[in-house]
Image (cartoon, rainbow, N blue to C red; front, side):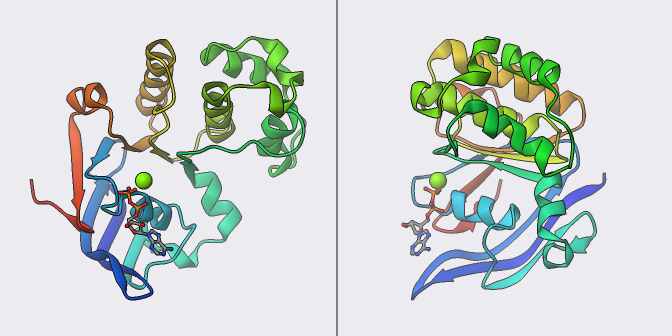
Length: 214
Ligand SMILES: Nc1ncnc2c1ncn2[C@@H]1O[C@H](COP(=O)(O)OP(=O)(O)O)[C@@H](O)[C@H]1O
Ligand SMILES: [Mg+2]
């Protein structure tokens, strides 16, 4: 199987705190991996490193055969997308947020496509012109997810994105992620959710900054 990520002896230190310790990992292309482990164990730190938002203190991350540092950041973000635990919408309207993926690609806003995506996450088209102040936390989370997926990346990293959602909207997100995974998007999802953990086929456990052997 082709590897999308190879992590070799990766450590991350902040001050005198060793947050990640000598991590070795291989992620196969096309998988849907669930990342679990206690709060504070280093899951988000590892995901931020894989998303190239922060750099490891030592060791290396190979993405698609090359070291992560060799990629141009804008290109890399289009290939590896990170959905935050606490999503933020910027600017004034939902439209600005959903236009952003088009803007960075020098494309015209495709309203039809955006409506289709909104529908996928159970939001009607009136959301396009809502103020970012008038959408709830759960709605923000789903709008942010559309921002990640409207041009599907090769890898989507989700960091506890369903934590603030009710059962119905969790299901919507699960179906959406499943669908993109079936279309070839590799997914790494961090979760504490018991039902999500139970439904997982592949898991990685992080504890005290180390990968637990399975
Ligand atoms: N930049 C930083 N400086 C100091 N401590 C940090 C920094 N980033 C994360 N930490 C600490 O590292 C540990 C791991 O954090 P995190 O990766 O967010 O864990 P998790 O996502 O598993 O809950 C926590 O104890 C956190 O407080
Ligand atoms: Mg976290």
